[in-house]
Length: 447
Image 1 (cartoon, one colour):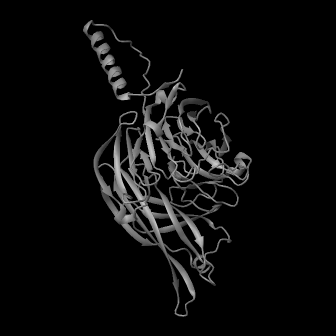
Image 2 (image 1 turned 120 degrees about the vertical axis):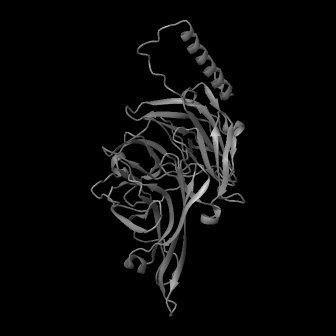
Image 3 (image 1 turned 30 degrees about the vertical axis):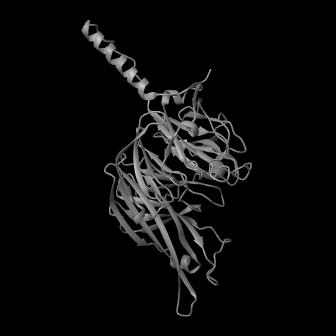
């Protein structure tokens, strides 16, 4: 029999009270504690995010709902979670851009689009649909617009960073195309005190040859702090115009993957680094695209003609072109496209991807999960997670890391699914709580 998770706050209070009463009773009668008690594994909150359909199945434009359960209940297949029916509405005109604290106790949100676009809010997670607003609100819209691309830096839940880029074609006195100016803006946000920390704008040129051929930076996203904490890496997408006409060019050579590097925390001194191993974009989409691990930053690329790679940026703030990790080769597929990914502290990651053989579902190409090892440069499809042509991962945002375990959500568009927990050390997969869906909607991750 399935059971629906109801009131975690009450249950947690009862459990805590019972524990305290037991501890007091033992002390009162002078009992000797177990000299080697078994460690008690503490549960953490797992917040499921669900994107409601707007006009088209899978578009996620009808808003975002969130619902939290303990990690123990998240692993329990007899538990049912119905965020579309019982969830908390995360403020956003479209799909909310969510982040969570490392311990899962806080959800950070910046609204995307509409009158409230760019508003930052944070909530204390208290179980079920209870998310209590904490701190003050602040808008980053004056700095990066009402549809900001932002991410939480891995600095102990202290800072968020949001970015944008504006482009403008430049012409000479004869009205011939010269280049495209790309101006980026970067703002850092104090997540604790809900305040703006720093804002800078920069012109970020490519090489003279690249610009003469019409290339320019057209989109940026996913700021990542290096291990030393003194550089910020920003992923970039390149586009191109035809220099003869200044019209958009869609049939062109894909250049080496690029990243913008800024001093941190000043956000000054921009430079651009280029990979000779990977080609294509490094800005990702909805999910964090690069992570610091073991002193280096590992970054996924997209739209690579040879299939997505995981690239490595070393402590010298340059690409390590001796590190070659191609997902096509690792998985034995063609046209791999990394949709989202997240490594645990052991260097093993769960990665969402599609490829040229993916079935076309109601909302786009079908997605899959793989278990990846950054050190061994290996990847294995996770067959224990069921797949469906309508399993859509393009908008996937969140993975929960709990030690060596990684929590993911699975559920085709408009169909029920489950939470799955991957033990990255062994590859063992646990089928957890059932996720109750509604027509046209889908799940976009766990936080």
